[in-house]
Length: 201
Length: 261
Image (cartoon, rainbow over all chains, first blue to last red; front, top):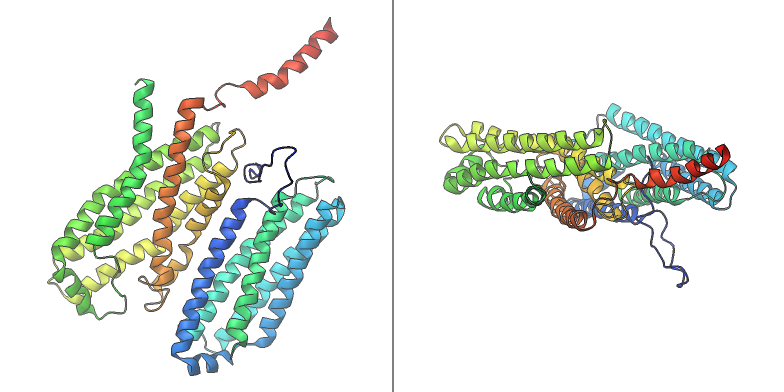
């Protein structure tokens, strides 16, 4: 069974002007926007509470490891690029390259999860937890929910890597574009979370 | 039972969904004083005061809501049977997952209201006990949401995989929205740990996002289920006649006949 992609694609009648192509299926975009709206609410709550106690948030922020955050950002940006290359390879008919790109992207996802677990471990060792203060509450919840997204995304990209092994040139890329769209969202959310938690003074 | 009567009960079952949502908002939300909900960080006495000052409303609200929550059952039954038409064959696991999720949703939400009915039965007791019953009711909903999430995901996945229908039961976007609405409950698990801020059981992400998402989803799903029923009655389901199989077999049979002769 594969996801019904035809239903979502914009069906342009033959002969009419070619419509702009929406990557993936429309549903993926609805999901992505709704999900980002929830994160935006969370960012709003964070900014509001930060406004209430700027000293506490600033002093707590300094306890975060910029190295971990920076490496996390690099890992996700790299994996996003690998996914783009994978989808491009499928579109250009170089299907033999796609499994390698998607596989490496999934490996980046695993690397991100491992580095986050290490980061949490150091925080717990330092006696910092979810209930330490308002800042660390947001830190653990926002990065934790994001980590959940990364875990789901890694599984999706790994499945796409396995599936792309049997693709032939000219195959439908809607499924791959959908997975890539989700993965880019995960990346984008991190690009928002990283400055918000680790950098903003 | 004749066809007209069957269709009538099918339509009635779908309508039970929006009727449930409406009664839930009125009796659970408004009369039950859950708009806004109590604040988990209140002192115990505030919980007692909340029941004492609004005793009749809260009692009527939850007692009626406990009855109307069961309207969720025929709705779930219709969705199950509709999914079985898509997931044909003897192993309709998605349809049954959806059925189990729907049934357990009724029990989870009922037990949470039952805690509040117990709290309202004898509000003059020690405030700490009333506080505990209120907390217990909220945490019932906010930690056992996965039953509902499974129901929503099973339904969305089944409809997304429907290859036979020319027009699917729900459009692609509505299926993905269903998956999203089911996932909005995940942050609600934090209500068990945090008593203040957006992740508490009266918070933005513990209450104001997931509960409306669930209820709005039910309206959207019911709207498309009704449209699908109308289409089904007018045009027929299509999959009942084994036409695609016959049409693929016919040329092959013709070729076989020719080679034999």
